[in-house]
Image (cartoon, rainbow over all chains, first blue to last red):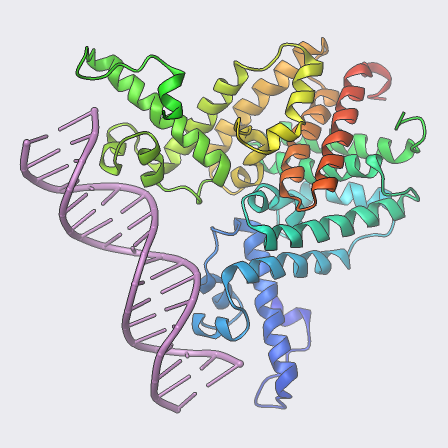
Length: 202
Length: 202
DNA sequence: GTCTATAGGCAGATAGAC
DNA sequence: GTCTATCTGCCTATAGAC
């Protein structure tokens, strides 16, 4: 059973076919597959063929839903971030620990595009970096809110420890060092959260 | 005048041509161009044609020096990191401030592959991630040594604030937010450096 | 060692049948 | 809307002349 078949009520066209809903559902399936593949392999590492095959379609159907691969990429990372956001714990402690965990690295559950694509996005154009910026702000807001602190420099450090920590740990080839990076960042982020802002921001 | 012509004593073949030195010099020129282009555009974003053209050669000559594009990539990031390492200040304060600066982002001086390629490397194979790991360890050692502290969790946090901070700031599309990220990370890294380890690592 | 030429493959995007 | 077929272009890697 393909993953997308479990995430929503997929109406077989022959049964009912409410055309506009079918269209939206197909679009979501493409976005789901794209989000998964892009996060794992980056923009250049994934072809439209692969995305469509993973969504159970062929290449030709792609352009009925999106104008270009770039547009798909921009939408897919937002789609995936929202999808993951729904599963985030509202508790700041648990959110940070879950993000900076070894399970997050071995992307069976799938990784966060903020970390897995951070340098990939730095090479892309404005459209795509806008998408990235918006999902970054959303997670930053969630971190700040769940820590009961404003969105300040302290929040940004926590974000960089989370996003950068996962990205670095994934790049490294030395499992012990990767683990040490995750733990160091986790300690640092939790510590930063407790240190309420005034005396820290001189 | 091309950049590689200024980095070393390039011997024109017709003048002297000490063959083995000429070969090494050509190889270095390729590595220099590759390091620059890969850091800017990532592995998939650069073709062998582009690298060789930038080095003043044509594609055919490439395989007299390297066996594959992957091998070039692995060597180029090490080459570039060593090259940048020679310019690093030995003072920890200056090193951190220079790394987390806006000048580093606008890669006219050229960026650090650790930050600019962090998620790119996470998608590559063992050979390449090994190169990345070795240059990561070298910079970490330099950070620890120049701060007169051991290579511990505190050093790893500084490394993630530096590498992650630059990578995130480069990905973001909002200049004010990018600057805030750099400053927050800079403050955090300098602060971490002052906090000597014992009471921090509970 | 470096060149030109080319093999062989894959990608993004489009056209037209159904 | 989805399919197959195709246009067009670029890529890695190799072959062979000089």
